[in-house]
Length: 260
Image (cartoon, rainbow, N blue to C red):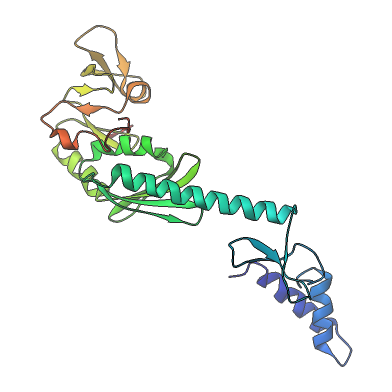
């Protein structure tokens, strides 16, 4: 809906209520013009139209459009076009890089942004996808059969819908012997956790005062909270037999119970 409509309705009602003349239409027109709700064809740069060559033009009383040059509106229109083109290029690059990955469903450019659909069967892979698309846990939106998130890649806004992720998280909670959830990922504290650098961390029953598990590398006395390990050396992967093809959420070039 046009956001000017409520304002226009109020102006029209006031014009009709205060009009004592015989031409209420004129009273309405003058009232709308007074609050600048009527477009003036004599005012330069108010409306831009696409030209056959893909550029922008301003409409005058003269039937021939005149190309707008150097105006603020033209600058904004050119910037919009450039962003939309970058979104199309990013969508093509994502398709080329991720098109064969089993979790990838599809990608499309929508004006100045990109939409990506994924099928996540192991919730442990989601942090790496989230990191690659610049999504933070606090921007996620839970849906009945998916989780959506919004981030940025190469300066372009990217919306990601991860189908089956809620079910994968539920399965992780059910199958974990000692589940602990942090930033939307369920960790099984009964399993060693391998960080992005290859170090393996073990939980030995100690926690921080606020309840976050403390882990150590190879049984060493030095301990670190699960939250800090995830933030500084994540993502973490439970040490278990995992098919190599599913170990990372993207091919070459991609890094990659209880509640915190």
